[in-house]
Length: 256
Image 1 (cartoon, helix red, strand yellow):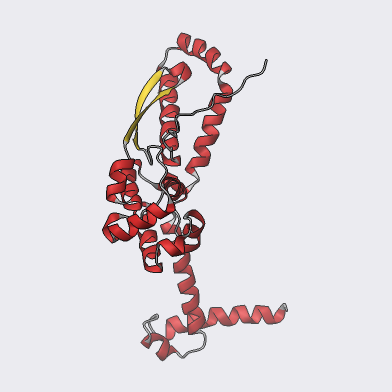
Image 2 (cartoon, rainbow, N blue to C red; image 1 turned 135 degrees about the vertical axis):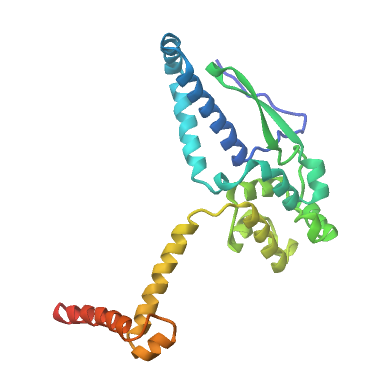
């Protein structure tokens, strides 16, 4: 039996779905499934376990997908803020026409159907060329967004770039469309919506580096100068700090 895929001739492309929306859908499904498994009586749970064994591949794929998406930059973006981010990227007038509210019905198989509001769609299927994006950026100015296309907006939402080299890879013909100042402004807009993780760890590492630098600097100055610079309380702290360094140097001399 030979089967061929139906050719779509309507010219209307489906709405683009971001990783943020996919993560929201999958997390809802997993939470719903976990709640049902915990609330059901033992008899119903045995029956459902038999049904789930037939869908174990689907469950495995959804769990791996969830774990992967949680490790990507999109996991730090609040889906409720996505329409506002799309407006900032595309331009207020563009976003009003192209970003429409999308309600997708997710059929959960054994869980039944649930209606989920999945935020704002990135596009309605109409292609937005680079020329149109450049014209929008020029005419709209700073307050009208950056005139990105649907595909570019999708990539920005998925990758949440933080460096200039990243947006050069994601946005076509970037130098001719956005000046360096506008590129920095774009990175600033993206950073505003991206929640930073590991800030405490970074601060801790920086604190250790600063302490190490202070100790190394103290090794070559006198006690009075060390105290005058705001480090320690004079002779006592200086001797403790300097003594620790001299003991390390002595050990290195013994064990070259």
